[in-house]
Image 1 (tube, helix red, strand yellow):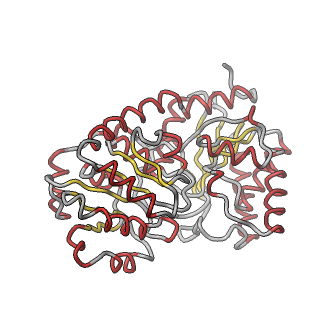
Image 2: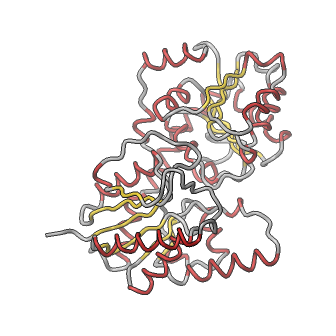
Length: 391
């Protein structure tokens, strides 16, 4: 007997997305999972092993960036939506999870599923603290667009409390909320090979005798790595045994390197982009993840770093930091954009009497959160509630 299909539509392949889909495929065996990828690589072109169990199909070209404007190439996006719809028909898909709503192809899918009675859920990292100021006209258009698709979906899958607040603002029904955050492979991040870690440290000139702050992400304006460099410059004299490790690549790389004071250049290490295995080693070589972003809807790096036992210092807009640890428990939260708020937070967390306690509580806080939030169970609950899966 052919099993019914569950389709998850996403704009690109990432390691954490593949891991979540793998867990859903294993945890909801009543359905055949279909992963439908609509665009090429986004921030980074990860090398990802895609397991057969998630049945990935690709509907966009490699250079079809998901970061391009949502109205770019509208006819191309419309036709892409048609190909997605045909895939649903050809594979007996009974329910759909759409990772977003910003593309014409996704909106066409939402309209089609509503008309055909196929329950569709929107899973997204929307965050009330990441809302940009809009002109009155743009704000009206946004509200009208959200009102249109919210009336046509079976539910919304926010990632945390700030996501709940975001969708409530636009009229979502809280009775149709399901908590489905990004989900990295926690066990893979927690485990580390001592010999590989030794080679990583040697390759980048890192000392096992020193402590490290680490940033992981794009070197882009919204990430505010400049703020981190300025805060580290203030902190450096008080913390002579601490250095800074910057993992990632981006357009601001050269400018940020020039921003480092001459006397601190030997205390700042730049790795460039790292694949998942080396990124894990960077975490295990470090003590504190610092995420100084002005805009950061979720930030899966928070989960990855906490799985490795790092304390976290993050701005107050970061969704995952808000969700996973209370300020002062597994790290500190600071006011986005304020070096006057960031550097005291770093000073507190890096104090010799505090750092090991923050690191220990980080692992505990992640375990407590994972015990409360089970994304596979939430997807199953959603499917039961719309009648396509028995309890």
